[in-house]
Picture (cartoon, rainbow, N blue to C red):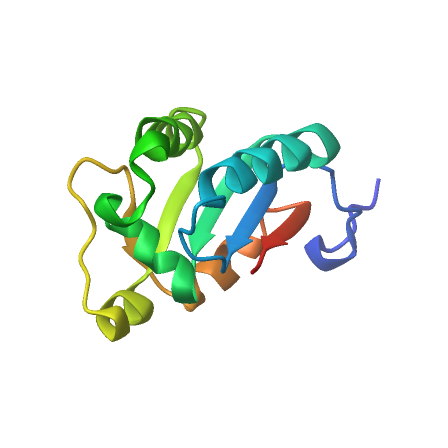
Length: 130
């Protein structure tokens, strides 16, 4: 029996999704993020990568998230991590904004390169933009 080369094998759907977030932490940020994650989960499977980029990197500082939404935001990030997902924030954006990741948030500092590397493991990608 002949086995096809890896590049010619059919791709097996893993039902793994990624969310690229560019929307900054305004008043509706957390509800919109929760809705985007729920929609993506329903349509494409569990969230495996959440990447905060650009203005969204401000959400790495918990104090920039609306006070009423902070617990839900932290819980969403933790749920993604607990399910085996990655929660990343762009290092360049953090440096440009002059902020650091709040220690109570389960976020790792990453890069667009890491995001692109992780895309190979995803079946679907969505974006949350302003």
